[in-house]
Image (tube, rainbow over all chains, first blue to last red; front, top):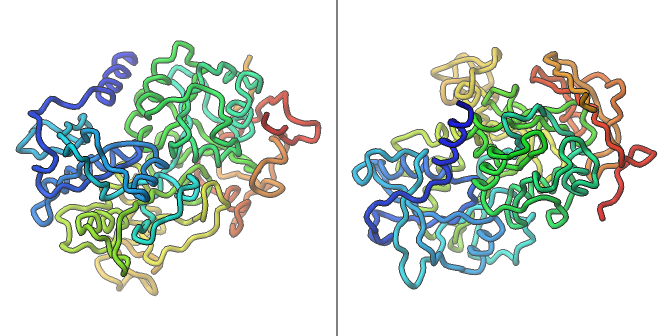
Length: 397
Length: 75
């Protein structure tokens, strides 16, 4: 049964694009061209479905996936999309399509098309990119955790930073049991946020990692899931990808340097609340960053890109969406900035206490397993004292 | 017999680490863990703050640790 579940899940993730009739990308309604990290594909598919069906501001998200560092350079230097991208279909086109389905592809203009909105799933500075052009701006979006995963058949439950240092920095010569087989260490290439974020977390530069370098998250997923040596297998993934595949993988609790215990991103191995990301007990996380061309006032040149950025950042968007973008973001395992209690300023940097201007912690908790006992429900500011009623709960400000 | 001692601790007991953050200068020692921090403000305090979250105690055997408990440089 476990094998069946694994194969089914992998098949969904890895299956080729659905065979809809070939369609020109330019003919899709209000296309917005994105180049994103593949850890963000679950979010873009879900958000894209809501936007495609929106009655107030319908658009079609057309996207390709690549490494975060590649995406940044594409936006900075104007590299066009030249391969046929994926797009989110409408219900009329494909009534059976859901964000869990493979996306269809469309035919790109032979001359290519500029990237309207690029994504980095970690701090841009971690990529050491070219200087940022003055007509490009970056916007910090929701937070994504990164995880180390093992097959369900593995007995391992946790890894310390010191263990990871020896496992991935020395390989078999690191002498860490059971992760002493470099053919069972499934990592990513050096432009990928997943590797760069973990590299910063364990102080092993991305170029020095031992293991099998894989291009896509789906490659790591299938390699770990189907390992012939499950006790020795370990891989790295974005939490978004892991959360969509919990049936086939186990994430390890992580204990960073100078920490006394290991923690999951969530409060327990089975929760979805990202409690430890929010409060600083789980440190391997990065902001998602969204880049687009802007005018002299810093306003996105492409209004569709500006609208999507507003949704991703939890800002007031005009027109107001006819769906709840924060619910989509949270459902994909991301943490809105307004729900964070800690912050950092560079990849792997020290954490500091963070007090968002418009906190949403109670609202976030209510959507991920239940609001804390200290959270007070409200319909206006009356029961909130000096606080503010926001999304049905009293928040501190 | 696995060389690692893994204990699932569901209680709110936590502890402080020592030293600074960043590239490691010390490994895990498996010794007594100091009490958790109730009002964290610094990085070290935040990662070792008191919590109701599930905690996992792990004391791995790391043969390549330096005599002082530090980590050797990468090659």
